[in-house]
Length: 207
Image (cartoon, rainbow, N blue to C red):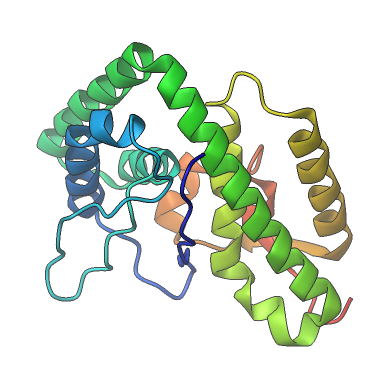
């Protein structure tokens, strides 16, 4: 059994988007620790690197967070050196995915289940009291983004999990108000409206 310790996901329009170097450092450190992480029983593991003053703290090491950092950095790299670094790290990440395919899939499946539970909890809390919870959407929706990313990493996603996510999406569609991209606009190129439709709008204050 994998050991799971909840991680609070925060990333909203009001927060400064991590710069490319921030995500590239996370990617480099995570890849260096990936073998040990994939063979461990942990879903969330401390990344073990500190940030500079004014930077957002690093999230714990998970496959979802690594892939999210990769997508963010792709959208925010500014120099040729950063682009080259991103390309190299992406190649190393893919090599690890191929080499540790079974362990990678198991870890992704465990993280998917954990993220699904937490996303479902938020939607239930919102459904009970929209007024008290609608403004949490900007960072809670990060869990839905991670579910999208992780779903592509699991070869045999449980049918019950697929159905549960589909039910959650149907509920979300009923209370969703389409609009502008809710994260920093710099990231929009890595998160197009399909399949990331839930990043282009907000949820109703009263449903």
